[in-house]
Length: 162
Image (cartoon, rainbow, N blue to C red; front, side, top):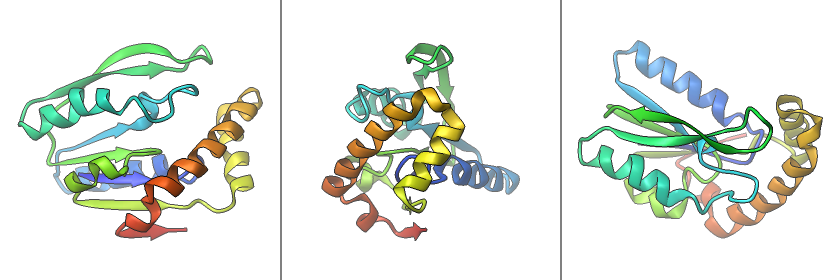
């Protein structure tokens, strides 16, 4: 299991897509699960038990997992489609808090992306999500600043990218 963690707008999703494509091209059965499928503005990290019970525990037991992804298409998160996760050779967890302390003993590797300045990352996320999301994204950045300081994610990473 590989976790790709870092603050919003750092490039985690892009890196994860490249990793999955490369592993798949090499014949490795790979699954990608993003924390964006679980997190909401009001629940940035406490959703983790849903990921553990729906995906991590079943896969560890050699059984397919599943989770209900958040649907953001209306601009407000609501429960969306059921996503099934077949047992892979490599599970890639991507997103804010994917390398949290509680999962580190299960990880084969933790990769941290810093993504540059907070202002630059905010500009990238606003370009991606729209100007209407700016206030929530700025609030999210304040939250993750505290989260990462307490969790020590960057310091625990085996690979740290700018």
